[in-house]
Length: 514
Figure (cartoon, rainbow, N blue to C red):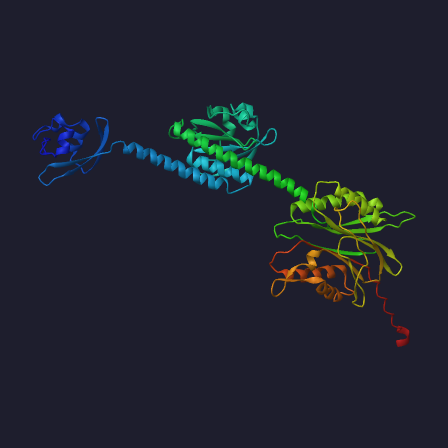
């Protein structure tokens, strides 16, 4: 292109594109206006325009003789497609980030904060997330234009904001809708001035209402484009799913915690004329309860039968939550049978009937120990139902096995059991334990059982020691034996006859020393 605006020369594609062009033709006569202006500007750069229905990019560059060279590159429909692809990529990145952030927490409050932050950063200038709450108290998370998040509880009337009450109920479905900012002034974060538009987006949950998302715009286009509304609706679905999952998890965790507190072994209290101590270790480090259990009950006596303490220790087949549920049933049933504590056989018979009359296919073992003070020490009645016989630690270090045997619980309609009566002298101990102690595998090679012989030797070393020391010693040795390896539930409880107080030393005869 000459400096005077006339065509100098052209190639064959240019001749095909502009049939009227000939050397010396004024550019303004044979070229589109935008192209002629680009040539006259004599600047190095890119200019976009259309020739017919096809988009083109023209680049201009000065030539040494004062002329200007023009190169046209046809874009076909690539540019709009590329713009659309770029938008889709931005939306995809946003949704990927949103899914990772939303589902990275099961804390309901934190999930609300994350949803508000993401919505304010990508969808609007500020955002508010409202949870259904309880009655008129609505948990709210707000994120302002600066990215600051605040949480509070609003005491408000949802019906004052069009569509909010319906969104919080979750049914029937509420569509994406724009509302008057003056009707939602209590939803605006502090410093949110000049809000042009407020959009209410319901958060669909997983079978339960998840809440509502409020988008606030103060800059740019007041209304969303069709693509922006689709992105906001898709984000709302993910945010609602994450929030409802977090809410359901929190509710289930609360219920589980209440139930677990009931299933956990009890904290032992004081017992008249008896020292008690226990240790409990479930099979899994992440578990709080298992198939082993124990309970201590203080029974009220009568003229015919003296009162005392009933200790029960047992083991349900298997481990984990299912076993723990059955242990809870056994413990509750034993509590209801306390008036029969003087008759071990009758208690076990009725407990066995309760277990065989359920759908549970698991069996259990149990040992009962009734303790009452007696002249010369502590009198025990010991009855086993398929459980390991208790061990008696005498004052001289001798370890004896109680003479009690019995059949498993929950298997046969009738059970048989044998009761042994023993007397513990002051300082002597009776140990009730589960097979998680003796069958614990470990040692130097990791495949040897702790065994009853090793348990007996440990108890012999504890002769005359308090109950707390006995159970701590046994538990420590068993834990060291298994190390980090897998193991079964472990439970043990020690009953020790109180030691007699030492006689007071005689006072020196001061007069005789004078």
